[in-house]
Length: 139
Image 1 (cartoon, helix red, strand yellow):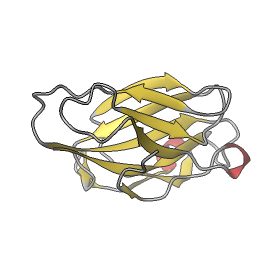
Image 2 (tube, rainbow, N blue to C red; image 1 turned 180 degrees about the vertical axis):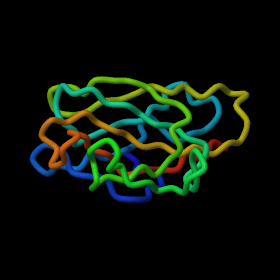
Image 3 (cartoon, one colour; image 1 turned 90 degrees about the vertical axis):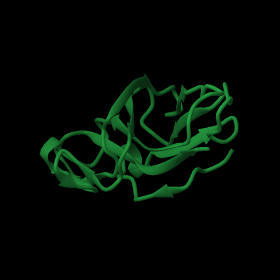
Image 4 (cartoon, one colour; image 1 turned 60 degrees about the vertical axis):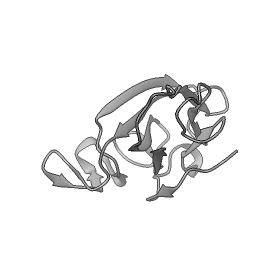
């Protein structure tokens, strides 16, 4: 298991566990058909979204990170621009994986990734837990 270059801190969810973002099945390189982004330490059997963004400095005219108080999570920060959203459901242990095969012809590019989890046990009024964020350099 390899932790991809991470940044920022996630916000606690159920039982004060903070979801974490990881990658699986090798690095983000062109031709890696098994590449996936994983979520661990999230609420079990919960809806979750992977956010992929092209920026970790700005979004919608504002600076990142953004405090997520507007959705009832004043303890959470959005670290990446939400340009692409992918929905999954965590398993009974609070883990999820999203396969993201990388075509052999994919050009060099940098994405930023972060998970958000709908978590009724999170210690905030909105019931949200956020993971740390990470950088995906496709090279």
